[in-house]
Image (cartoon, rainbow, N blue to C red):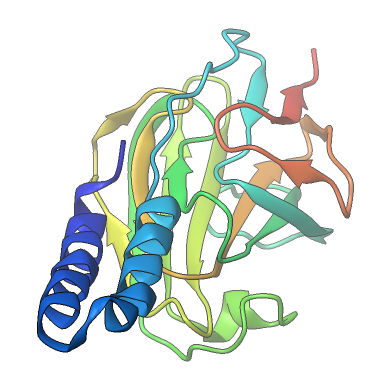
Length: 208
């Protein structure tokens, strides 16, 4: 499956390949055909088996854990928390998923720069889209952050929507970063350098 936002890139590339191949010869079709194949790969939208355990939170995206840092002043979580920062390369699935079930109680889009997504301060200066998700057990935030190549953040949800754990809610185009802020009542179950899979990898467990 390919997300609908990918079809203009995929179909446009293959149309260019067909046109150039017919007009200038087959060798001219190679590059746009390869590009179209990459776009189909980039915009892939695989099915995932989501953990059923209500006490665990899952990764919001595929990628590598770049850092885990303490947060004292998150204005939505409103208690001491930890932030898990996940970097998505251009080869990772870029569809974002909700770490837990809950309702969207905060939604905030911020314009900004397009620095490389692996820079330490991109969460503060780059274009970003934050969701505050709450249920009867806890409140978290999950933020999509644009990168050097990612120039558009896509969201399929809005304020007061209900999300199920692992539900797709948007994507970031072409290299990016996703951050999750979880209260310290949630034990972080990943470490820096870990590779995570969106909707599958458990990144936190609610302490009893």
